[in-house]
Image 1: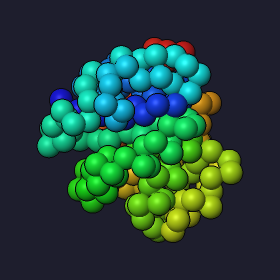
Image 2: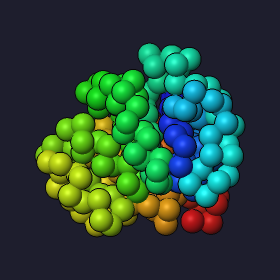
Image 3: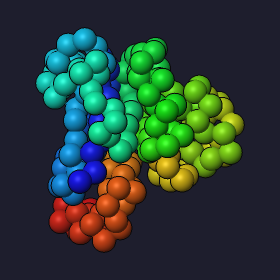
Image 4: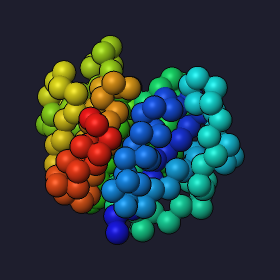
Length: 180
């Protein structure tokens, strides 16, 4: 069974984070909502408190297939400032899978992960996708990296993750089942 971690920082965009959790769990992907805050309770960008499954310090990264970074402000900044997370994202980009949505692809750009890859992000963050071939597509899959533009593309982003980790038929079945 595939396993992912959705990284939650104070100020994360709840639709972007929780849509991935929901869609991936529908696909029977094991999902760990992982807090990078030192607390299991993480406040979203709109003040919704979410209880994470675990703290980043307690995460078995060897058991994971993919790391997901939801956007939101100041969530994206908080993710990008977390040293351990950034080290793991770089490691995963070299031998596993990484996903980021909204402003969070800027973290990947800052880490040099997007060089030569097609990538997209929330409007206004394009200059932070260093080395990327920037697009305005809702979702971009470039090898083992998937990026997306924002709240309105969260379902498409999550379905792209399902396609990457399981297959397109599973993603299509979930899409039909949720009337997408």
